[in-house]
Amino acid sequence: MFAALTGLGLSTAAGLNAYIPLLVVGVLANFTDAVKLPDGYDWLSNWGVICVIAVLLVAEMVLDKVPAVDTVNDMIQTVVRPASGGVVFSATNAAAELDHSTWMAERPWAGWLLGILVALAVHALKATARPVLNVGTAGAGAPVASTVEDAGSLGMSLIAVFLPILVIVALALMALPAWWALRKVRRVRARRRARPVG
Image (cartoon, rainbow, N blue to C red; front, side):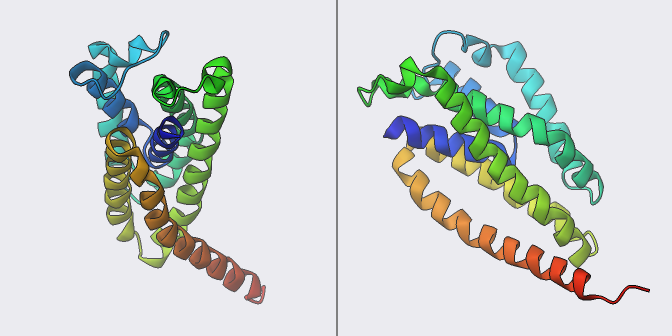
């Protein structure tokens, strides 16, 4: 159960920011016993890879705070964030040994698939809501939303690794603003459809 919660939390974090959970997993694998990377994932703890991820993270954090540019960035991240979700879900499957479960170990594709689907769902919500937020706030909401998303990604990554049982609580807390954002998007789209043409 804890392995699944860790994977779920990290892939959720990847849906908000692809590079934060990768960086957290790589750094923690080097300095703590909290993350034990399975065979084939040692590259995540390589300092060269960590430096590249850190550079990509800085670029992502800057681009995501600029209105209109953030929308283009979200289009590019449609591939990157789900892939990151698949990697972090699979890379922490070693925690399955703590659950005395062999199901995930025997089906390595399942971790990838679950991570990709969770990260893609979170990314889709973010990418759908952001343009509406930008229009509604004349662009002023982009840096605020981006900062909140980055903080959420970091917080969720740390919770997933150190207190996986709290992933359920964190997801419940994230569900409220997600529900609000979806309602706002639907309202805006309904208003656009209701406007007379011409």
